[in-house]
Length: 127
Image (tube, rainbow, N blue to C red):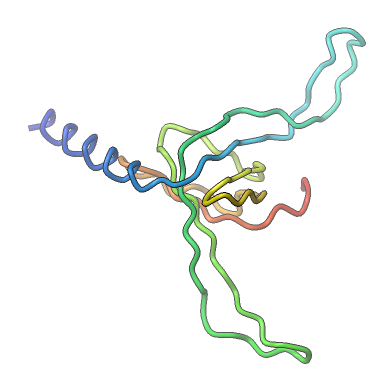
């Protein structure tokens, strides 16, 4: 029975991956030691490249009227394989439908047997 469930999960994951229309690159800001100078400093390190993924956009709530204009909130969710670890505050560069945008992970990933979902925000710099 366990083998059958695993086969069903694998098939469901494969079916979901067939909906992925984009690719993403994951970048972390890490303390790195320069081998020549022996000095340590923080810099961007690419930890994964060209991972199949899909962005989903949703409107959150109604438009909120401010003094100057109505503002509509938008939720941006990234779907990708559950095997990839995404740390908080990672920079995530996504290309989908010919458009490339830079985001940051704004929530802890919801990890399921077939995929994971991560809420994103536009990247505004390293925290």
